[in-house]
Length: 91
Image 1 (cartoon, rainbow, N blue to C red):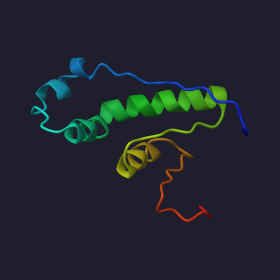
Image 2 (cartoon, rainbow, N blue to C red; image 1 turned 60 degrees about the horizontal axis):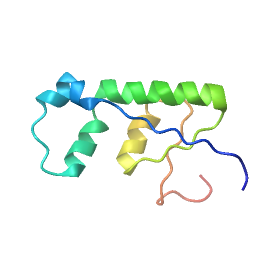
Image 3 (cartoon, helix red, strand yellow; image 1 turned 90 degrees about the vertical axis):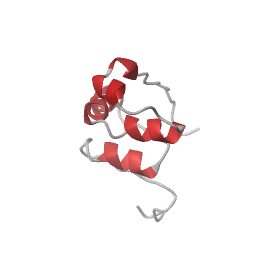
C-alpha cells in the first residue's frame, strides 16, 4: 500500500433536476448515464466537489464509467489528467 485512501460516493438527486424531468424516458441504462455526464450544471457541480476535496485532501483518483466522462470532467478541473487504457505509460 502506497497511501491511505478515503472513498467518497457522490449521490445526486437527478429526479429534481428540471432537465432530467424533461428528458425522454431512457430505454437503456447507458442513455441515462450519458445524460448524467452531459448535463452542464451536473458536471459543474461534480467538478466543484472534486476541486474542494482535492484542495482539502490532496490528490484525487476519480473512477468514471467511460473515457468520454473522464474527459468531460478533465475539461472542467484545472490541472486534471484523464487517463485510460489507451494512454502510453509515459503519460
